[in-house]
Image (tube, rainbow, N blue to C red):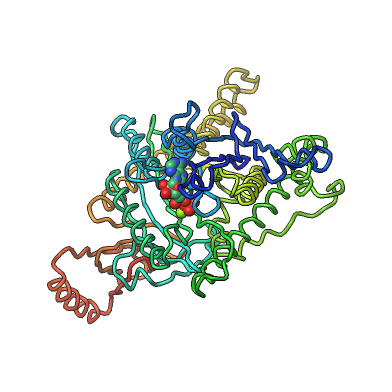
Length: 537
Ligand code: ADP
Ligand code: MG
């Protein structure tokens, strides 16, 4: 169980806000953010509730990034040291991790998540950190694989930001649901990277593709939600005990909410309404999850909830969550993940197997009071969500570990029997013999499984490094991911499990020739199958 961690970052005044007088409405002190409603400043104490004038919220981290000259200014590095490092440590332990930025348009989401060339943001720093942490392991003890994908959700359609070719770039992809792994994007390209430079190149390529879509609509602000996913698989063999974990790191830069302006063109209004639709759904999902988590909490400890509130010290905020009444007999709310592509894809990150961090970005200006207050309320809700992250361990490795535990248990039983030998030696000898036999068999099983696991990991890594091919065993068969041209031949014998993979690394013209000749030959023999990338055989 882990609460969603929430951070708030206040950006510098924009040129327009400074020209308007640069009135400061937000203050940050330690873990508290205070927001002042300047419109109520002239009113007497009796006329308005003093709590409406100054609202206070408490978060896990608060960053003041308004003026670099100020002593408590939070730079990109400081934000990374808290949030980025906790993403990396979660991933290295084998948990899924999600970090998403939320806020009004122009409040600094993209700056925080991606940054600028002079001051890089969380995503590139996390990529650097991932490869840096790998160097810390002594040779031979640790081996890992990093795969990257990058997508954007624009007008409720999913597009691959790393797919070569203009047509493929524009094609929208389908979101499907895997019975165990949950929602995923079909045919999304996965790129195996072996160093930080490759990862950064992919990130830059994706950002460039994203920006092209945005400038088309004459807006400097990104008009799509972008999800950069790193799949980090680690294999460690220590004292002959294997460990293999897979962690999915989702780094999300949401498009910002904005008010509809009647002067906008139709496309722009549709785009805005789609962004707002997904953000509203995200809000509903967050509220419902927070409410469910609070209800579960209240079942465990009836007294604790009322005093905690929703992180804000203002009564009205907590009451909106806990609602009226005792809550004891109420049922859990339905979570409408499917109402938008964004929430559907982030289902696990928001309410399941993930350690999740939200960074809410706000403007310091009094002009943005309403938007900032709504962002802070939203963030306060998110802080109540309790997720259930678990270490994603390989099934074979888990079996090896469990068998080893069983062996240890049996060995200690044997030892205790030996120590308290009873008067009938023949009976105890028989029992000891049986136990010793089970121990021996389990030890042989563990040895074989460990050997198989080490070999398959080594083969897989070699395949990836040499041919950029990833072969995974799936429910229906094998899943082969390769962006290179290739042929796959299956043995005609149905009992044979052999698969031959032809990796075609020659010039396209020769390749085409070779491809057709070989294919014809194989087909004539009647025992081949041409296989397209990423489809199960
Ligand atoms: P959003 O993605 O929320 O629409 P951006 O990240 O594009 O907003 O930020 C809008 C502008 O504000 C950009 O010019 C960006 O460089 C600047 N900005 C945002 N946050 C900061 C910050 N913490 N420090 C310096 N400049 C910032
Ligand atoms: Mg942006």
